[in-house]
Length: 304
Image 1 (cartoon, rainbow, N blue to C red):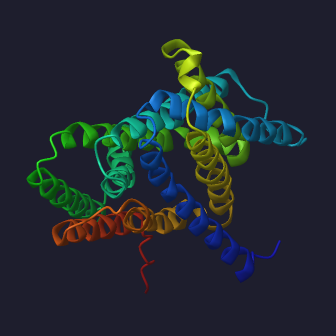
Image 2 (cartoon, rainbow, N blue to C red; image 1 turned 45 degrees about the horizontal axis):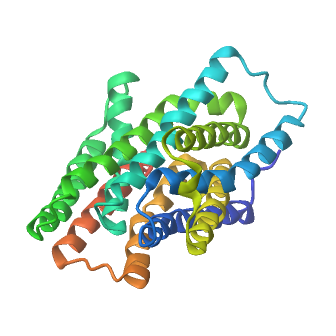
């Protein structure tokens, strides 16, 4: 079979950029929704209620294929566990954290996950980090320190709590990426994503049913509109766009494109929320992006 042409890769890159951009809109929509109701349990449940039918449809479609692998007990356990930590817990911690930090700062912290993957791989998979990866870790965390120190100087008393919650979300997503690689290889990216997102949706809905009365759904119509927008444009579409991009251009290049995430969120924050970043925070953001690009960039092969 001949190698894919430039058009094949170009579409993969375009899908990766579109997926990152749509994911970046999510924290903006969350912050706008918090102007009407500051209840992450209800907002997260609404988002997943509207997204769930699409994931069920994708799961049903993927099961029609005759060549897919039969799910073992370990696969089923992996889907449930990774759906819980990678999408339910990570999303809920992110929703909670965005009550206390700006959308732009939240994305900078969330985008630490590639460096956390490096650490987890070194500890649990015995993959020794290269000097380039260690340098990336140092650069990235120096950038985050600059951003957060400037915010602390602005006397945001809830900043440590918000930053800690978003960091927990980032760490959970990193765990999902490290542990989920084998399950994804067996089940395929679309099938696994549909199953894991269905599991996460069920957890989010169950959490609402356990913690909130149905009267909590008596919300202004703009909240429902925002929840639908989050479900379709910042959950369903980017999830499957990213899955297809992974298939076409690989995880490394998707991660490199993902460096656009914090930048686009900061831009949308300026445009939609009137968020302000000082020069020190801009420098910190640049360091974070430089560190992530360094850790995700494929080193050039040695020449002889």
